[in-house]
Image 1 (spheres, rainbow, N blue to C red):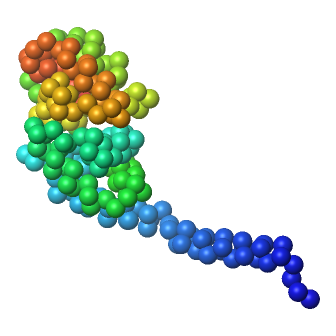
Image 2: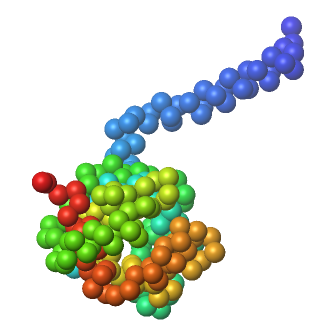
Image 3: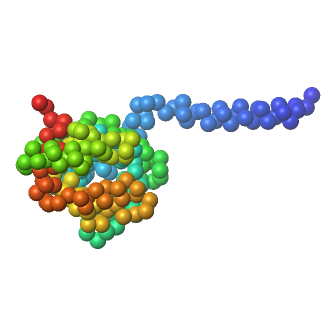
Length: 219
């Protein structure tokens, strides 16, 4: 008896599902974690094995940062929405580094891996007027970045606590002076660029950074 077309189609679907299911069954959580760690390996040279950053290499801490933020920045570098301005030398280096990530899935995996690393705490707090820094931070930064600089995923605002002072200052200047946050597709960046122009003096920025560095530290 010759099988009907319906039976042939059903058999083919079952076979296809079986073939697709084999590799997924072999991908245990442990093996996936190992693969993600392998993808993260090129990042270690600058950002550290724990994602703690390296101020001497101008590489920020990325451990514990929101995965969506990290993924968005990696795409910004890959798509030349960030790191193209002549003054952003370290951004240009990062653009070259992200070429090691083969595709969007690799970007997602690296961002997820870094986000799960233990959050960093700034080793040496920056000096500044904490009273002025607290007032300025709460008045201009806290609404987006959180009262304790913990970030706000709903507003696409990154965690600032744990970042070194030079990195924060450098990125602020990039936003203020048009080296970052100018691409039409980088909406959060454009918002930050507008806010950066409202701060009056560099001393005020130093005071804000000093306040940020107090956040997340043992009391």
